[in-house]
Length: 136
Image 1 (cartoon, rainbow, N blue to C red):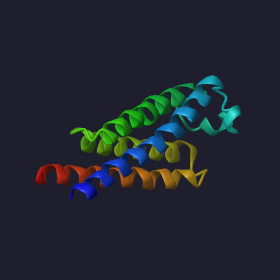
Image 2 (tube, rainbow, N blue to C red):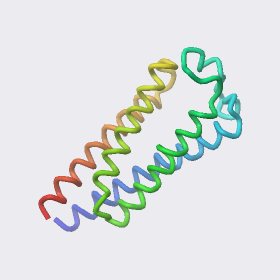
Image 3 (tube, rainbow, N blue to C red):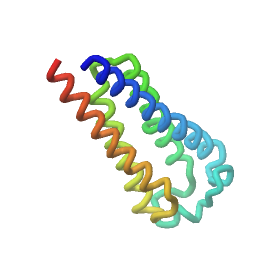
């Protein structure tokens, strides 16, 4: 049981770290060039959204999915007792982020369903961690 628990924490931490690194780099990219040009995007994508440019989405992406997932990864790698709640919360945030993207921008990238699935996986892993915490 101990080995499985360790693998679960480290696997969750690695997944959150991957999400964090991508979100941090994309968030910074959107903040530095709010027209989206350095990420190959155009503000025309935002025509049906409440945003004029990518600055606010970049800040949200950096803060919640980037720094949030980095903190979640750290908690998981340290096998902290809040890992389960953090991971579930981060999964919900990721799903809301992707859902908002698809609602306002449309389905424009294979990364959207991929990250939606990762959000579901985060919720699942957080749930397993929560159940395991209750059994220990």
